[in-house]
Length: 435
Image (cartoon, rainbow, N blue to C red; front, side, top):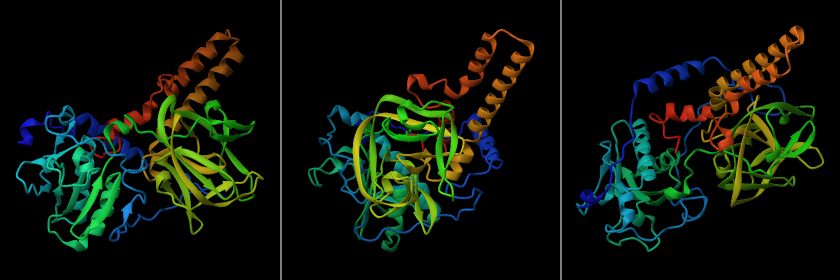
């Protein structure tokens, strides 16, 4: 039996008292700060409507690239067998809210990678929310008998075929859309009888969420153009476009991530204005729809989509994406500005990633902006005290170092900023956003 030979059974822990209290406190704090409007012209908060989910159509797959592409689930690997050491890395899914067909009676449909399990559990919740009396059903999981094509991801526990428990084909289009929203790396409305979903190889997933730019990206500052890797906290950078054609500037208050040695998959977006934007797949870019900006993952953009940019000649306008490529590059940088937006490679983008709502994440980062204001006031205050009382010059620099320490204390090691790590620690029992 497969169950007897699986090495571990992993489940995500739910509900530690301390995390629940912190989660509640953070939710209450989000009521206070307003969100900045990220569009050229006059600023001001704007109520956004809830995004309506559209079902996938028959034979449609998301993203619109082959399953084994780098931007989807990635290349297949050698078939995993029960006597293989890699089999011990797979987990068993005993989620009671999921129905496993298990037609061969050996429990193989429950065997999968940890990433596949997390996405499947997330989808099970979405299915119950969408149809309260219906549960998610898995018809095919790990294949140990050789029934699929040689390059199938079923052989490594990275793919599942799913339906709803009531086997209603009219629901399958929406089920596919829910699978996309749940985080599966490739979803295919393959058959009238099931939806095919797959995930990336575990080793291909970074140990931390990253939504960053490459070090060679060009930033427009008041001192002139500068490469991202040379940008420092306190620099004033272009962060938006004004109605009069001028750029508005915002101060860099922290680096959310900065690692010159980390390799990541980057998306390169080329526009008809001659700009080439380079950023990671789940970084937010503002796509213009009917003259309205909508935050969208970079990997979800397509040829013909419009972004707001400035041309080499200095003309601010909507530009059309003409080409999209993926490549692996070394060096990730994620600056945070006071406005939450930044102009990178002459294209307006968000400072945030991983959560597909710029306004929500900007509100969640209010404590970081507030701490920056307090630190700046503290430094200014002690500078005034020094000038007035003629205190020796070492004191203000020492106090300034202390005041600024919380904003930068982990980045010398190439790690995430401390605040996103806290958010992951709080939210991970409730939402699968920290992988």
